[in-house]
Amino acid sequence: MGNLLTILAFLFIALIVLVPVIEKFAPRPSPEQQAKISRWILPLVGLSLILALFKSFMS
Image (cartoon, rainbow, N blue to C red; front, side, top):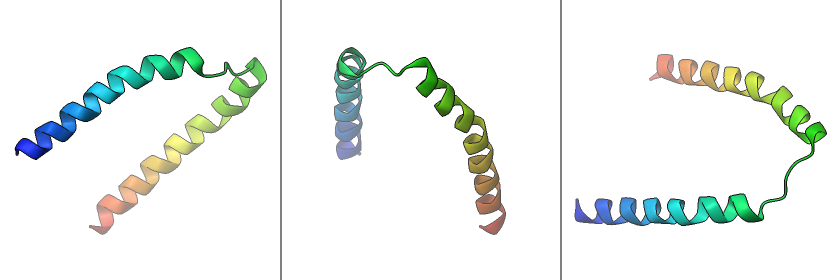
């Protein structure tokens, strides 16, 4: 149990450090790139829900 808590603490600290660094240095996408990406988000979410439902019924 101690190993699990150590790993979770390490991951949480890494997340706290890395998210601001990535936000600071990541390139900003153009509006055209944002539109292209947003067009794919809802179909992919729907596909993942269908696959999760299928996996739930199979197990």
